[in-house]
Image 1 (cartoon, one colour):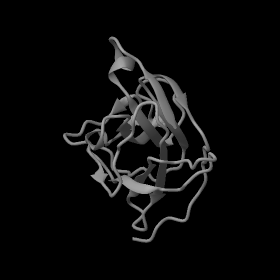
Image 2 (cartoon, rainbow, N blue to C red):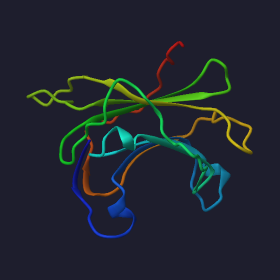
Image 3 (cartoon, rainbow, N blue to C red):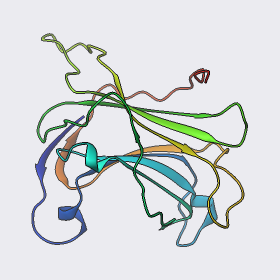
Image 4 (cartoon, helix red, strand yellow):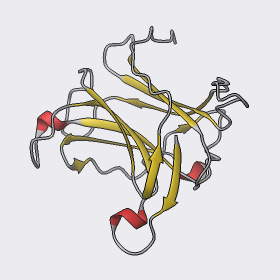
Length: 171
């Protein structure tokens, strides 16, 4: 993807340059709706590794508060730049314990060769294992929608989108 022309000024759009992948989500029919549960991994375009986070909600749009919403940083770096192409891949699987879900982001900061073909320079960026939280006694084992969302830019270009099942890695 490529994010162009950051929005400046006041309000939500100008304060967020967030690129999020939301997964295991349901239909959004209103506020405090348990059918709209979802989780997300986020990075902020042009804002480095400190911007790597996760969030989840059991009743949309009420994200559950956590003191530290940072993810486990992996080998790659969020050296994204406004106006430059980068690749992002999010992989989600239910773990063998049947009680947790792992979400992992990969990043490719130089995704295309001179002819425009993908280079496949993927590096693992961040990871979060989701279990249970507070009053909710069920981990996010359900399926559901997958959404890619980018806020804070006037133009966002996407190329080579793919959504498919994988064989989960063995721990």
